Image (cartoon, rainbow, N blue to C red; front, side, top):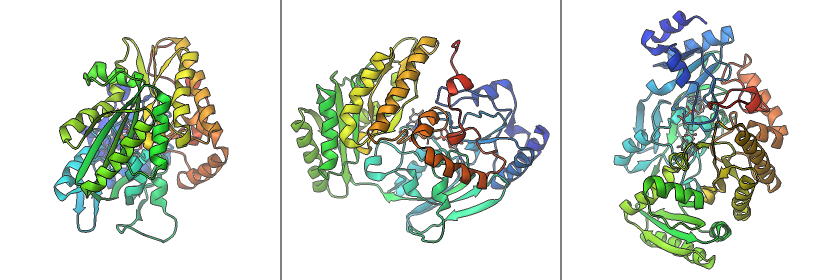
Length: 474
Ligand SMILES: Cc1cc2nc3c(=O)[nH]c(=O)nc-3n(C[C@H](O)[C@H](O)[C@H](O)COP(=O)(O)OP(=O)(O)OC[C@H]3O[C@@H](n4cnc5c(N)ncnc54)[C@H](O)[C@@H]3O)c2cc1C
């Protein structure tokens, strides 16, 4: 690779080839690891176009990277090449309250954007739990969503348009600034969730909504996980409109109590429910409805509150859960393997129990928690990551879970995306989709330079075919 050429494009200070940098940029929040040949930090669209032209002519891989918080190996450069760190491009270009949109560079961090929008009474709502670090480019790349997706949806619902540098360096302006557009292929929507495989997003136009005036949170404990799952299904089918509906099982509760000292009751399951809106009576109505349904399913309401401080306490427990699970047991790691499937509401309770049973059978610890109001069931596998037998057990557990999810009409990923970790199960579940996606990829990136070996091109068995970031003799 011609490193001097890259230096001449972005400047010497913005090219990193030190082994320590390459090692760090070889991981994200997943279990995977692979080092790039070089890290380049572009500062402008023109620089990115030039890098793409060079890489395309030489067949060098480019992996766009935001914060590197993807959980399935999204930004791990399996084919080496260039990691394009987008964080220098972090400017909010325009906020247009009268037109309810903003334009941003891809390296803007979600929380920074929402802080800037707050004085206008506006918000960009997808907010994943990682919003403190996640970039808008990464959220678009993964179609991220979060704790309030049950009411507000995912990133795709808020992307009006974008500028994209294609694999050959061409710059295209996609979508619009208006709320609606009925003109041809909606390529900007295709880019959302494409995990850096179809183009490099260099600017995004985002739809904004008003911040709600009132927000109320309720907490219900359950002695039986099944009761909590049934309450969730019932709340949704009752026509209720929660702004958040979260489940935590006993392992998740114990993890946040131990690390964050939250003092939550140590029961089999807790549901956090929230309603928000412009009119307090409407919020009260939703909260009453959810309370009644929880009680009908043997839940005990332990709190309901409009108080921002109290809500933040519970909210932080949920937001910091991943970190808390990492400290669940000395010497154990919290791995994101089968971590975000979605199942029909009626299967929520069964799925949660199944996860526990499958974990026990295979000698690993697994939690069941998540944005269950959207049907998303999160899990994490907690295990000693240096133990070969645990990895084998984890892989059996993952396979069994995905077989179950498929059998009840669920999906491999409801939130975090596919990348490497989830590709084997997803490819098996959706063979028809692979063919169409491969054709699209070939049309937009014929030399396969953009985040290669991901999604449909990811290995069928990444455990044997690639490196992981733990010291285990496979
Ligand atoms: C503690 C924790 C909590 C999390 N909670 C959630 C959650 O609640 N919901 C959720 O959805 N996810 C969650 N995630 C996963 C992850 O944080 C999100 O998917 C996030 O949107 C990724 O943003 P990032 O900037 O880190 O992107 P990266 O991980 O750097 O990249 C993600 C993907 O986007 C591509 N990409 C990045 N920038 C660009 C660009 N400019 N152009 C084209 N492609 C690009 C990359 O190539 C990659 O494929 C969590 C992760 C952690 C560690």
